[in-house]
Image (cartoon, rainbow, N blue to C red; front, side):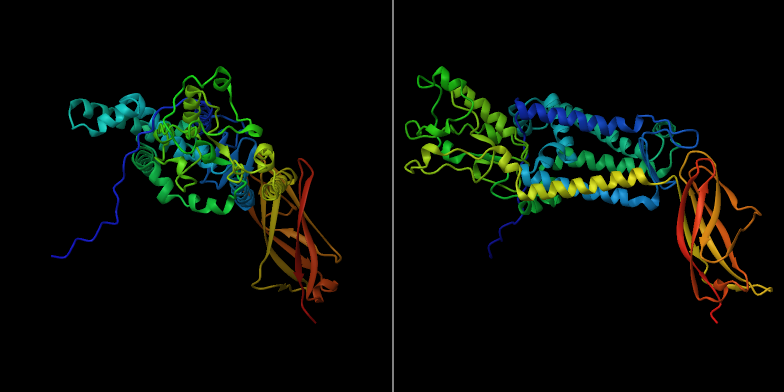
Length: 497
């Protein structure tokens, strides 16, 4: 009988990170509170824009094809603002990764934030790491069923709130909330909430680190953004190895216990042949990815820095300086103990790792795009027009011998009030302009709307433009309320002699 080939699939081993306290853990709590607060509460912030506009501060109004962000209103033809913001987001990601590694993944990525929230619920319901391990290994009974169902129900409530908050960004939040409760909301709202609820529940509750390892492309891209001078979470192997079980004892003086960094000018030799690492596994037990940072840089590491807090706590207890695991650059490795440079060696200052040509270039590009968007935002007008000559036919000969061109002009009123727009033209020739449907040269454009107006331009029989193939002209529109003007260039087609 042939041997059964080995399986290439390894079942997932559940990870139960231990609770840890420290600077980075507190910083992550603050980031979680800030990002979740913005996400859940922002749709409910009101912003008065007048009687003809929605009063929601942040709104992607797909029905009217506009995006509102506080006092800023983006129209469909102004998508370059959105494109610019996406480019800035990409450059910002490159910038922070080049300088500080995967700080986005470790602190602000939605997968990280919601996983942290789900882990908090899990510890609250089931206990810390040891209690969760015991519960995981135990057989199903009433207690285990009660704890699991309680945890899943809380996860489900968070997931529903997540999906519900998302759809509130696309229509008036209070109105949609009432319609959702009354079961009168559009079907697309319920479908969107259901999909986002399911993905949040599964990704944050069950897949967790697998999303980062197998589904997200960023761990594979980050290698191109980092070098040996990039600050990232790492293990000072030269200080920690060889590992031993040395504990706090007589040699751990009060001065040593109070130390926070090594005196690099007088690096101590390993006590009794062992390094500072006591192989306590604290860094592994707190890692949400389940890796050992002491094995070196790994694709799975999201640089959340929880291992730093765990290791610093152990170093405090055994009377060793902090920083065995720290934000460091891989190039900052001291010379060998017998090297003459050992006594004078010091790691490069942090600012030298951050301010390097690549990060300066990213910062300059990011700033230039941001400045361009701000400039474009402030110089744009409340009125716009586009001119499209009617090509079939290119011109019409009148009974009196004059030549007429027809244009479709789109007048866009981006203000909150109805405005009277006056049209005129400038050209080197004596051309006449007329509007379809009115005997005047003014037309009323409703607030926050685009009006399609047909315009006729005529050249008399004896005018040079009538017998010239192409004549340049410029069509002007003026807001009679504010005297704001704008124009668009076009051509007049004559009868070529």
